[in-house]
Image (cartoon, rainbow, N blue to C red; front, side):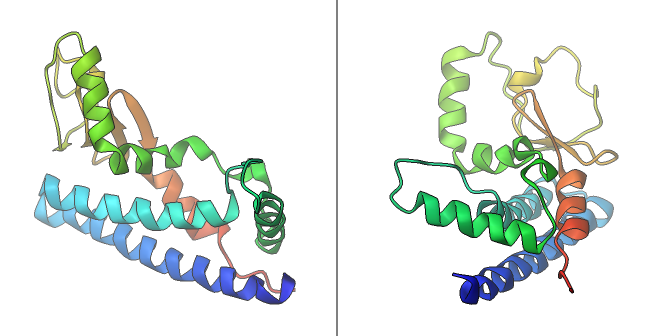
Length: 174
C-alpha cells in the first residue's frame, strides 16, 4: 500500500488547491459582488473539495464494508504523513456539505416539522439581522464578518475549514 500513498497525497493537494480557489472566490463574491447566489455557489464548491480531503483522511469506520480495514489503514498512514491525529479535525464542521448535497431531504424535514414555516433562504446577513424567524427556518445564510454559515439552526465555521486545509495539509518533509 505504501507505494501508492503518493496517489492519495497528490489528490489531497489537488483538492486543497481547488478548495482554496473556491474559498477565495467566495471571499471575492462577498467583497465585490454581494450576490448571495454566487456566494453560495463558491461556498458549495469549497465544501465539496474540502470534503474530498476529509473523506480521504478521516473516512467513516464502516465494518460492513469489506474494504474497511484497508481504508482505515490507508487513512492512518496518510494522517501520519501529514502529522495529523483523529482529533485534529472537528468532523461536525463538514456536515454542511451533506446538508447542501441532501437539500431535498432537509426541505422534507422542514415541511413536516417546522412550526412557523417562515422559509428564509440564501442570504448574506449578520447574526441576529432578522428577528422573529426561528433559525431552523433559515436555510442557507452566511455571516460575512464571521464566515459562519447557518443552515436550519446549525452553524458551520467556514474559516475553520479553510484554516484546517491551509495550515494542516502541508507536505511532510522528513
